[in-house]
Image (cartoon, one colour):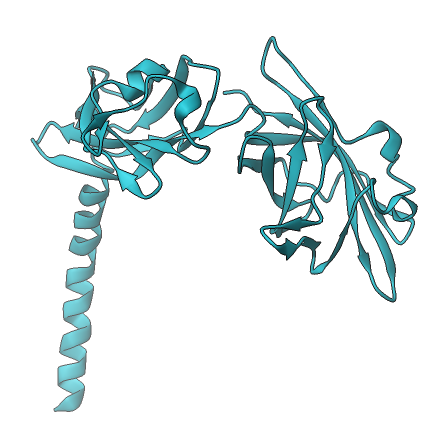
Length: 296
């Protein structure tokens, strides 16, 4: 008797499973309504009012996406404004397409209030880390409203924050060249922390590392030994810098690194960086890298 019940349950599960998958496809928008954000993170650089561009891939199936509504809000120090409709994109193309829109600082602040007050009309009044958020809602030809799970954040940052691509690099382990670039990934994220401090997410092949560094007014790059009262480490070992540990960084040419190459025409600034860490009982690890800002 138990065997018959088990077989019945298994048979029922095989019958039900295909309909669940089909229902899930409709919900996720495979049949129209799915929007893939191509710019989930955008840095608003203080002093550059725009325009900035945001793009999305709108998928079309048997059921068509007819429009995408974009709502905006603003968040600062844990407080969030009301949400207002920013833009509606009407769609007439029957096939999957890339849709884009642009915005400026004035577009971002228009119509929003925080604690009952209009947002400041000067971008210098905003704090690093404040952000606007775009939320996307699509409508399809069946009359369904599809809430997109992803959002785009436009974060107040400084000039050198953003995504960077790897150009060239060297890694020396105990004085021996171990990598001439093959340890690095194609892309890394550099975040703004304050007016001159940045956080590099990822160290060469080790993406679980982070490094705080500072860019001075003259374009030189320095590395604080401590950040927020905590000693900086790489791969769990003490950070070494050209300023304080020159004898441990003899292979990466400290004299011709740790500076910024500004690109005021195309925005493809480059950071030339040398730093390392020291493993007790083993020896120094040295890194040299040139990173170029990605401009969308």
